[in-house]
Image (tube, rainbow, N blue to C red; front, side, top):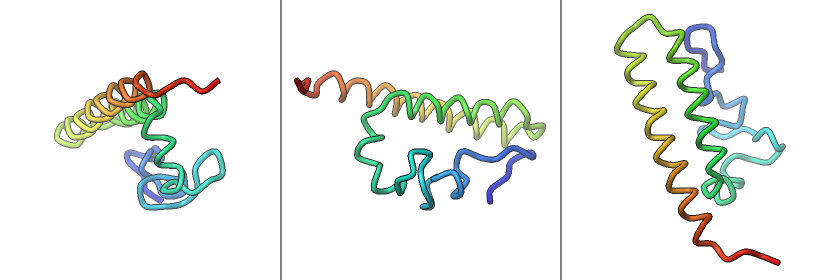
Length: 91
């Protein structure tokens, strides 16, 4: 389990993070990826989780690194929203 400053990390494999495991919906993270990559909320939630962890960090370098990661998640959220807007609506 990955802990940062006593807080479970969003990258924790037990949460369905990037090293495998199961997602909160019960599926495997990698098999859920194609669905998640187009979900802006998924990426915004990751950004918020990382910012929360960064808020608790006392090490300036670690905090800056986490805030940089959060900004990258924001970019992924914007790209996901753009992809979703281009996708045909199913009826």
